[in-house]
Length: 139
Image (cartoon, rainbow, N blue to C red):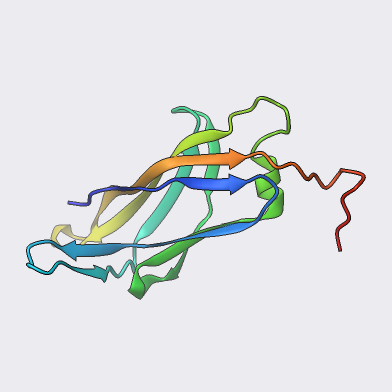
């Protein structure tokens, strides 16, 4: 059984960023617990943040970066982070998110098993410097 972890994600509006994660297993039966990465080859990984059950706030663009080492990430570009919340709009600035995996189960004819591996809150921090400010100089 997979136990979901919890991790907050904070995005500053207008900034770029990469959030990287490693899927790992810890053997607590060992007197000296050992943590090892889990190979996520062949896994489907999907993440979404929603302000409620029906309103998608942000689809996390997840990319597996090193399956053998259990590593995946998602990147937020400038245009996306600027669009997450309207300035002075009163729009939602945070939402709950989940990252789920689908894992082929060879013992069951590769039936896909689905599990939530990470949950938390995505919070968008409003920025002060805007590209449209007359005092902003890029370049």
